[in-house]
Length: 358
Ligand SMILES: NC(=O)c1ccc[n+]([C@@H]2O[C@H](COP(=O)([O-])OP(=O)(O)OC[C@H]3O[C@@H](n4cnc5c(N)ncnc54)[C@H](O)[C@@H]3O)[C@@H](O)[C@H]2O)c1
Ligand SMILES: O=C(O)C(=O)C[C@@H](O)[C@H](O)[C@H](O)COP(=O)(O)O
Ligand SMILES: [Zn+2]
Image (cartoon, rainbow, N blue to C red):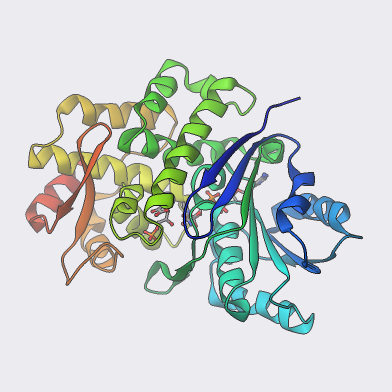
């Protein structure tokens, strides 16, 4: 029997994150009373798990399935409209509930339709990827992409519960585990250096979901995310630290038409942010090299073609952290000392980019 860890996210409407194994039967407890219909939003890869979940809830609830496209292809307005269509045709009311079952892209679109249908219905997030477990399913950032950029439309909408069940990882491809580690390592660099030590000690053990090392780093990353979003739900300050590596990372995802994994793109983005901090004099060589060593040990990319700079710069201008046309980056003064760098000189940005450029 595996122990269940419960982490509560503070805020106007606090909610629990349950972490462990064999937790899917607990979903019914989290739905509360008064729910009649449940819509499970899932990608094709999670079809069998969605059907099993439907079986377990059927009888108590009327369970509907919305199969959405895989990965980033789900984060489109047409997919939201498809889900709203199902809800409209089945008289889905304000007391019904949405379950997001899948990776971060699925939980982002599931959150978005729950936030917008009738201006908000109950949402339970059931992440099935490492990245979804440690980051995307927590904190209520929901959203879709537009032609101009990533996550440009969305809302802050907290789930009623997050169920992190490691049993759901039994089908996850190895490369998706490693992509998820980019966000775990991000948590290490911005606030939880113990994560970095554990990854450095044995990368094979820490990336094996059956080991205590895996559980430890996942719980550290979840704990950090829960603390940060509990304090600053709408990203008016502290929450920006969770965007470490994302300014360039999102621009790379957009430039690559989402063929790059989110974790891979922010891996390059973190090395870029580290190089930027080295150029401003706030981060030493060893800390920058540590970024490269750790991310490479996870087989994550640490460079990108140098000729794409102008395209990336144009996309970065639309980043949500920009203010009055000024670019802002999360950088480190040291490991676990994140800060905001506002309007760095364009020549310095290009110099930092050349350091990651190939
Ligand atoms: N809302 C937030 O706070 C937040 C935070 C971080 C990332 N995100 C978003 O999350 C997304 C990235 O998340 P992701 O890496 O989980 O991507 P994803 O949802 O695309 O999942 C990655 C791949 O793994 C597959 N998969 C997931 N679980 C599986 C399982 N158990 N078995 C087999 N296959 C499985 C998916 O079908 C997909 O092909 C991006 O869109 C990113 O912007 C959001
Ligand atoms: O929760 C947050 O806040 C984050 O920034 C977490 C990021 O890992 C995540 O990718 C998020 O979706 C990025 O947000 P955005 O506001 O830059 O779109
Ligand atoms: Zn991210």
